[in-house]
Figure 1 (cartoon, one colour):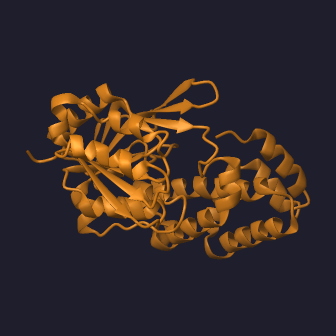
Figure 2 (cartoon, rainbow, N blue to C red):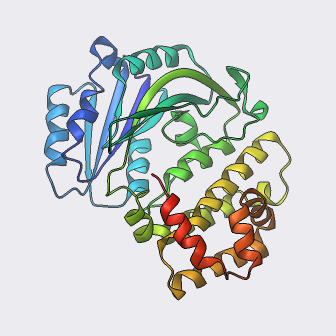
Figure 3 (cartoon, rainbow, N blue to C red):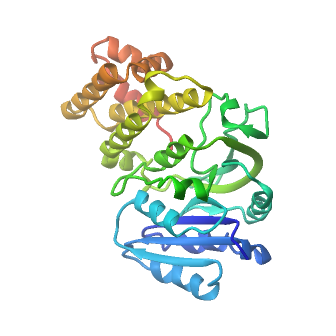
Amino acid sequence: MNKILSVSIAAYNVEKYLAKTLDSCLIGDTMEKLEVIIVNDGSKDNTAQIAQSYADRYPDTFKVINKENGGYGSTVNAGIKNATGKYFRLLDGDDWFDSEELIKFITLLESAEEDMIVAQFRRVFEEDGHTETRNEAKDITFKSGKFENVITKDWFTMHAVSYKTSILKNHDVTLTEHCFYTDQEYDLLPLQWVETVRFTQLCVYCYRIGRGEQSVSPAGVEKHYQEQTKVLKRIYTVFSRAITSPQSNKDQYIVNYIIKRTKLQVWNYVMISRNAQHKQELIDFIKLLQKDYPVIYQGVLNRSKGIRLMVRSNYLLYGYMHSHRVKKYRF
């Protein structure tokens, strides 16, 4: 039977979590419609062995790709290359699916023809186990139609998004390798060819929040903040026309997404430390925006009173903003 959904799992040193991740894909008869590609990104623990044990037991559903470490983007690239399903989506090796919702989701995909599917997802907090359901399409007034009709203040992230596999393959969508935060490229790059979109109330993805090794943890941000800037600069280049002169609702969606991610990165620079090097890197980043991407620069200032005050104070408020951001940050 032809596969309906290909799931690419980025797996790097996730032996503590991977069994739960893969168990969530054990969905009875529906498994014949599911393809799970576990990309072991040079793990040094037992990730590869755990992954292979599932491929051995369920060879029609699970396949393992063992490769040298290349970062998150390289796992997505490998997943796209090997995918055979009608639709494609991501699952991190420390997250999992709601199995019942996954069954319903695959049933929906069987008859779907839209280029992009946006579902709900659940954030699960490690500290106390409480959950939050995220509906990134809560202000969308239609279920299926042209992406051009999307008007929203929110954004659609990898936890919610699936694409037609043919779009990714035919247009050679490739994420940056040896780099963190490339899920943002996955969120945006395929939109160049997405014409239609469907929204569903199904809550498929369960996103673990609060693991210290995550790139969104304070330690992760401090270690990898320059890679976030690298990703943003690539996005600025790819979407330079939309940034310079947005002409459609899709352009405006892309610009809004970029402004929000850029605003978060400005706050990342502020949060990581008070030292002179990081302060100068922040100043240089904002000068780059002001000179080359004035729409993004102005958008960030318009949407953040704190950043606006800091810039207009000639960064005299940098130290105060650092202390405030450290206290406020939650991931």
